[in-house]
Amino acid sequence: MKINNLDNINKKSFFAPSEEYFDELNKKVNTKIFAPKKAKVVYFYQRKRFWLAAASVITFFGLLIFNQPPEEIITINETTFLAESLPESYYNEDDIYSAYADYDQTTSDTITYLIDVDFPLYYIIEEL
Amino acid sequence: MSLSEDDIFNALKSKKYELAFNLIVKQYQGALYNQIRHFVNYHHITDDLLQEVLIKIWKNLPNFKMHSKFSTWAFRIAVNECLGYYRKEKNNASALNTEEAYELIKNLRSDVFFSGDEIQSKLQSAIAQLPDKQRIVFNLKYFQELKYDEMVQILGGTVGSIKASYHHASKKIEEFVLKD
Image 1: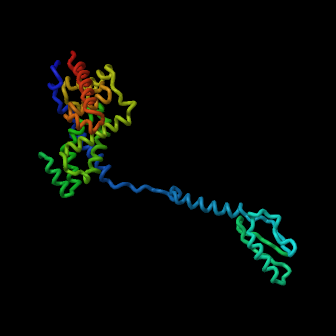
Image 2 (image 1 turned 180 degrees about the vertical axis):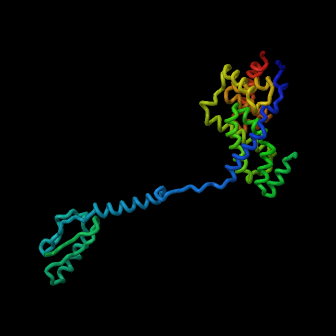
Image 3 (image 1 turned 135 degrees about the horizontal axis):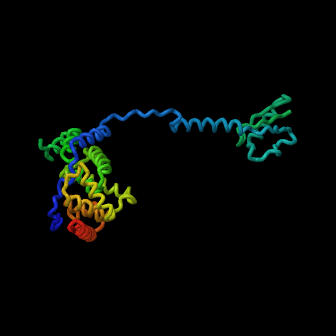
């Protein structure tokens, strides 16, 4: 077959799918559009907040276990008051003075003070 | 029953989107199938793209402003879907060589959905041999009968470059189709 130019070709109805095909197509499209989405089962461990909570708990206990205050006991007496054996970052100087003031006012032989230090949480000062 | 754009507009105006969508599908699915298949050659790809086009039409129905003909809007969605396919399959959607084009002619003749004659199958194969840009331009101009400035809006570039692409495409197709 020979033609003279492209305008002589019938542009319409190159392809004519069957009614069955379009019925099938419409079913597929309607399913995607109108069918209710199936509920997706998401287990608790698959949620982000579970892992955030787990990480928080692990961090908390990790800090509790591994960040124990140093076991060293500082002895305070009138002559050697300052805790010179400690690095400065371990104690707050004001607390030490406060402890010393309390010591002066007591008659007890043994006084134990809990003094806030920067890090870790507590520091024990014992006076024998 | 013959449907018109007015039926669709009326359904949209009264916000009966499901009814409007069903009317659209009935009215345009055949034309959309043809349009997409001219771009991608194969039924299974056309089937996937047509589903996507219909889903996009459904999703965007409430946003349709009714400023243009509904068919123009629907065909624009189909063209964009085909262009998206070309971009995604850039390595695989390249032009066929002559041997593959003759293979395509054979396949088309045995394709139950192909209702064209011998010359139409030859034209389809000739189009398949064009580079991507020329193929897109030729399809838009020849089958969709878009104006050059409309094609610039879709494809970018300039009217001059699109005219040149169409000219080259037509020449190649004529050579292939008109030879014995």
